[in-house]
Length: 302
Image (tube, rainbow, N blue to C red):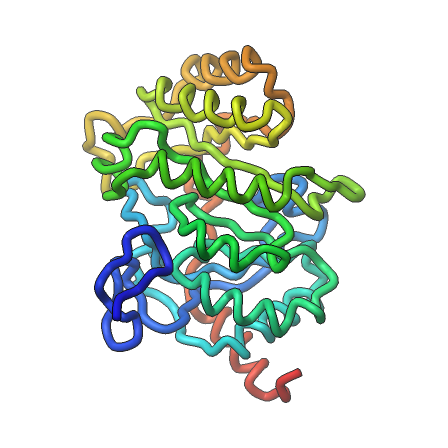
């Protein structure tokens, strides 16, 4: 029996054999407070991030390639995942931020069904947008904030740069489902407690792709919150690529911003070009994670 966690439906069972995502079981790479998300997510104390290993996309320009290829991380149980959520809550995290969760949607749903009653902070589902609508429906009522990427409106780009077929159709359906579940954003003291915040990374030389993403989101709802990101930088894998081997220019970003405003979309966040720095990529060394897991192993399960 194959895996149905994402739209690929790859033949690996993810128990004895790794899927396209590069993982088996339930695997994480980093746990901790993160201050570099959008202000309504990070707040003052930081977002309680759990970075999952592997990914169901293979973006050539991935800034988290260390973990997205599935080569770095630790296998854990759903009980340990739940205990990590409580650990982050005890640290004072503003929320529980599940980063790259798509290929673990089923064990995440199982964990949240058991541990959600003990959480007094929002659960954020921080994904690449290439999801299964069926699995999103399993998460209804368990996830408070959806934080998806919407990378491509151009399927040729999606296939070339992320090895993803029908990305636009798939992501559009998933973001529509997320919007159905949480159509109204609820803020408290500047923090997003419930709702949907879509991210889009503007890629150099491909402004029409960004404009078509904006077209879809504006049609879905002009009141939707969008984080229009300028933080692209060429990773070593693409530094010699004719398209991806340079950073975004201010003129390119300004053109997309102007188009956004022309669609009367005024909710969300813009970025300074100075955000396109390797300095904002988290440290994915496993020493800190191992210390946390060792600390939890000495405590009884809740």
